[in-house]
Amino acid sequence: MANTNEADEDGPHVPIVCPVCETTSRIPLSDVADAVDRHNEQLHDGDDVAAVDPDIADQIADLAASDLGLLEDAD
Image (cartoon, rainbow, N blue to C red):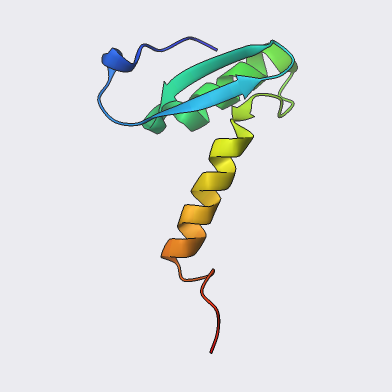
């Protein structure tokens, strides 16, 4: 995974981790899917090893569920 300097692009950067390579990179949000796919294809025979940091992925899922009203109690 190529390390990307946050000054390279404006906007949010997402931490990507690869436990096998023991690396962490911060990738611009718009490039996350391609960067993860490329890393896994080139270094792990396409296996889903590198991914968005699980803690961040959980936070994003919670925010999306909240925005969709899925976490509200039904009255």
